[in-house]
Image 1 (cartoon, rainbow, N blue to C red):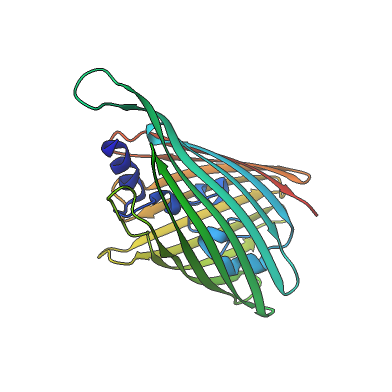
Image 2 (cartoon, rainbow, N blue to C red):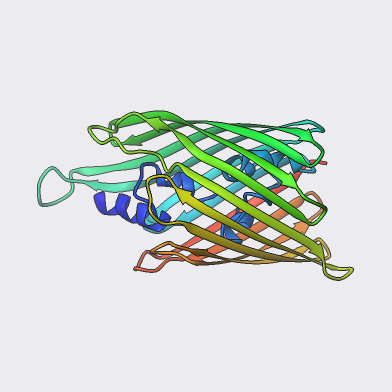
Length: 290
């Protein structure tokens, strides 16, 4: 059990509680190295920068499934409702693993149990001006390990600025809050400061491109992380993506693609881990409702 929790934390590159909070949501953003604080245009803004939600163009509903190390899975449901001045989003995240063997002493297992983390997030964003927005996310957290339980909250706050039709800038503080001790263990949340930029442009009549960059500083951590991402889209139908994350021990490169048909978009992201931690596969299905 301790090995499983330590490998999850190592994959996230942080030694804090509930590391699933910093694994990102949405296959599009993950394929672009999670450099998404200035580019988010759906409910994933709740996790990267709540202020970016104000620049979303359409209501969206997103379903995500992620399979990663140690048979850990994540299920995510997010909905975004943008408006002229106010925009709102709701997200439900469930991460866990079952079938962990329980032993009271060396020898055969006496049974199995699971580890499950949950986050319910509500987000609101407001356009101060046509090109400037602020936003906040409030999150309820719950964790259960065997018969032990822990709960708490976190808050994200951010600002986003659209410099022109091509360039957007973002600033956010994330995961400010606390959780109650799990049994006798009490750990801090992965509180961080995130800044980002996104530059999008039309390359030809049929091809558009997007380049993104985020800098991430975890509070209480001496190092900084840098995320880079790129996306090329053909005829608003097929997108190819790649990204790279600097400053992590077990991950770096990410790739992915997206296919859009009518109101439906399917996205996939692949992240290989080093140190024998395996690979991560993320699938998203999004519905644009207008």
